[in-house]
Picture 1 (cartoon, rainbow, N blue to C red):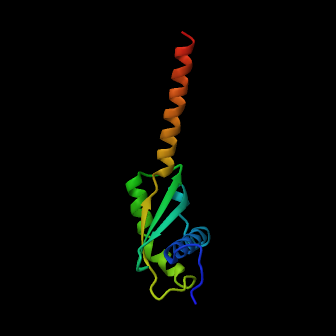
Picture 2 (cartoon, rainbow, N blue to C red):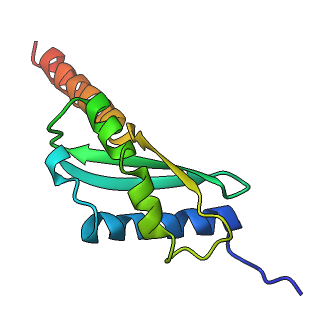
Picture 3 (cartoon, rainbow, N blue to C red):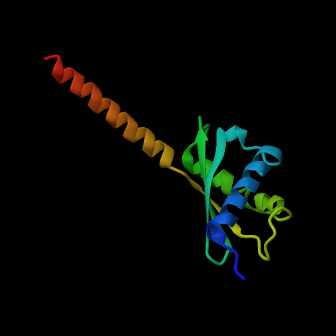
Length: 125
């Protein structure tokens, strides 16, 4: 009999990979020289062989291209540390991508603030 799970297997594995990668970032791989690195989400392929890991950085110390190259240069190390904790037949290949959602949200918020300031200026004329 099949159990009713709250969501798909890929979602569960993605969440587990995200938790493991965050732990690895704290305990084993130091990327503080790039800025304050945070992994924000993981999207895994349906066959569980490839994972896209999205990151965000506060106070970046290098260009985004340099940061992306540097984080992706640690792919094998992350996979090595992740392997004993992730109980899958094949450990997914990791690719790291900049998560631009926070910057996008900040731009939208700034636009709204600018609009509100513009409304106040026209009211006082």
